[in-house]
Image (cartoon, rainbow, N blue to C red; front, side, top):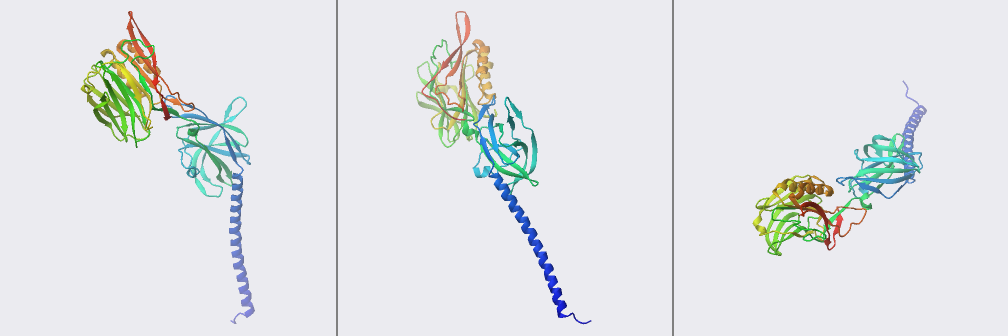
Length: 452
């Protein structure tokens, strides 16, 4: 066979080169057309996201009793969007820096609802479950979500409702379904805490004197001869400093002042007994108190109760953390009125939501006596026990001398009064009849408050 001519070889090489170039050009065209489509898609979504805007009204809220650990909040929201339909996802989250909030994914268990505002009422918006990947407008995967979502229209007013904890924020996403994928085009958040959600609690009080409350009638309002108990709910706000928690001072028959003082020092709880300002006895009740946690402190003593001073500390879930006994001889010949009470200090290390004192008149009243403390313990630190404690002493008749109750919880939407009184119920015996009386004890000096 003769070799191919030079012309034929040149033709084959030319055809081969053309085929290769066409293949490369096809791949090149496919790649860049795809890239161009992606760039065009991203440009469209980014420009769309810039045209979406939110408006959110001031918050309306109320606390959910009895605990006030949760709040029902409502907002009017209005969204402007160039799209016919936009999808909204609303969820609660813990505050974090704004750069991190933008990447926070919704929780499945968020307690939220969306309603359309109508002339006379609100209509619930039907939700659906969104279980899908969600992307940013630039095509980056934000994350996978499984959450309740709502379809809304542009330029329409809606009511957003959510049950949240005081330290939560509410995040709102605006989603758009485009070419088979979900994109988050815009987002915003509201911080209910900044708008007054929550409650004040006492940080420092004036001095409450109960030896002779206005309009009160003898006999003893509080006596230590038979039995007395006092306690309070307090929250640790700062473990890096010291603070008075409570100072109960009694006048003795010898005209001495005996004080039982509870204080916190660098996260440890101490009890101190002093006479006329001089320390008689000091003991540590518990160490390692946790910042941000609630504790219930209960102190009791008296001849009917035994020969010791009992000090008990409980956690917020009613678990006994420690119980100590101090010989009652440390109090000396203590018998008289509960003369002065002071709570907290200016260091803002503790906050106090409520306190009580109850005095025992007869051994037949032991059950009602301890019911006061048990009622306070089983209910939440924010729970108002006014009605409960009044019923206990009313049913006890003359088995208890008196009960004094301080309730320092105040809605964060209004500033608390600087002179919130304690309420005192006491029995008066005389003239062949008995009657449960009520008196109010106002502090000397101002009370101050902090967010609880």
